[in-house]
Length: 279
Image 1 (cartoon, rainbow, N blue to C red):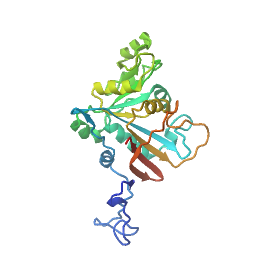
Image 2: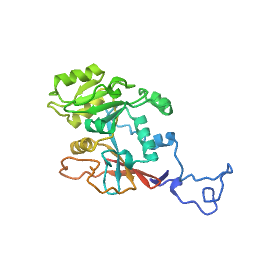
Image 3: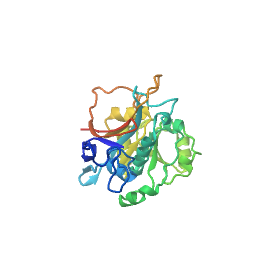
Image 4: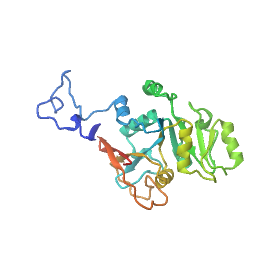
């Protein structure tokens, strides 16, 4: 892993003959490559730490998205994101989950990707305890129809009870089925569907301020259109797929394109790990 932006001592090329050059050893006597090595989870956690936005002294929700895209814009291959991912992408995926209070995901992605409960990881136990977080993030499924298999472990055996975000007009029998399975139903819309701004606000009121969404494209498009996305962590996969795969965000276009600013850029094995924030 190399940090390409912002520029730090690690990104400055070393002078010939210094530790880190090919064939040159460091103080420990072994080869060194401080600018191009596998980062520890602690280093990744520091690189992706959440900001602390506050309003009147109280934390307010910060919503980041984590997505992967090929060079030609595909967010999936054969309906799944795993084929265009990498080991480094999965380490960052796990780190972002390890930092989050809640993972917000669309119902279609739950069905396609076979979502399971987020697990408690020993590597993040101390960090989460210090932040006052439970051992693992909750999963919040966004669904208008509640057409979900509530017998799945995501609902029956999570470390932290799964949330289901839906509208006030959702079918009562499906709401009852979700609650019977152990899920917590959160109303975030006056009609059948979920209103993105209301969903973010509802999660904040429940104490979830470090929000992470993993899509899918339809949900991310709704969040973008509603103007509630604060940060995009986009992994650019060095692959070409052609075909008609979805982009990372779908749905109607926004009236005026939203411009984000680059916060950081990492690279490993040709994958670029970008992090953009709203200005």
